[in-house]
Image (cartoon, rainbow, N blue to C red; front, side, top):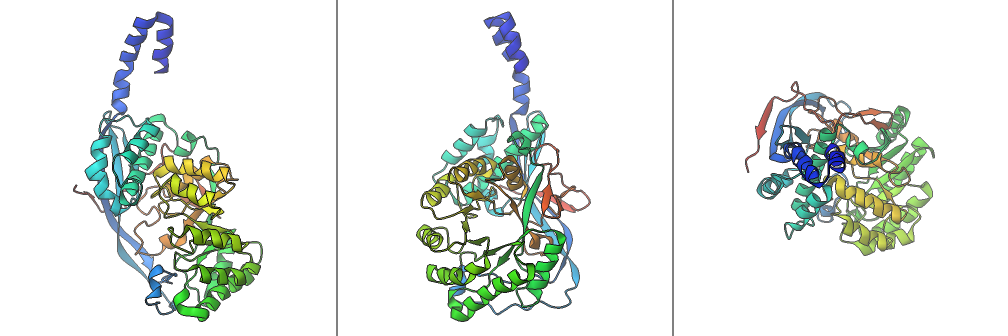
Length: 426
């Protein structure tokens, strides 16, 4: 196209039109020809451990029994599967993104595949905005999850078309992304939690997030256990390691205020998702009442929800997830909002690729780190398996993920791990 532009300047308007026409075959070759969703299956080895429950909104009805981790947890081989999205251009170039959520599949196949056919993948804003405007439910839920998957796959395609990783396309310069150890599933039992925290610290993790197990239904006794976990972990790692805590929407405001008052002297870096996302007023009241930073957002859909929280001064840490909030395109917009409100954007760590590339494209003042969910490496019950089926999985050195210069997100499936690959019917 640049060649055609220069040629047109030299030869005049008629030649300019002819030069543009000469470029048309290249433009046509990059247009989308096919959108495919498929499942890969294989096997992986796991250990029968790390099944500690976390606080949950449903626990007001019946809290689970306390978890006791077995001393000897043998390894076994279990089935593994994941869903990927593939885009193919009319010129035959393929892009790949995943794993994606199964809830997104029907929308991708029924609505977005036909919409994307024949489109120019370089039209970033137009494609996102038209997907968003195409359905009355597009602002949230499964439709936004499908839009997120499509947008992420389009960014992979743009990288492959231009021969650059996504974080470079976004203007990024950070090839090493700091991440924190997210300790979902690890035992909270006295002695075991402290041992794990010290081990992670020794491995080089400068920040750890732990998942609180108790909520209002268990009364004062449960509250004491939640505070005691903070106290035990702080004693184990000292003041040099950041400790964050996640309540997974399982609390109410009085409970959160009581916990924060007792935990505040132990300097948590944040308290995460104390309430469901529709309780904006509770988040704002908690932030007003405590010096512990308040975090939430993995279940936010789009910039408008984030803006309402920031305008209400309800959060210091936004955790929007590009697998759900609208993809890379929307997460970049959310980063701008966070920066304008002097808040941090630390994306929820779901499938990781998109989040890491956005973090790498932003200032550390806005996106200081990402989330690395360690349980993905050991549990069969979570469907994402931390890049299990990839030929070159993400590499973590101490507490940093090393991004490569491979085009797009650099995802390539490993034939040695994929025993079966099946298209998903529309």
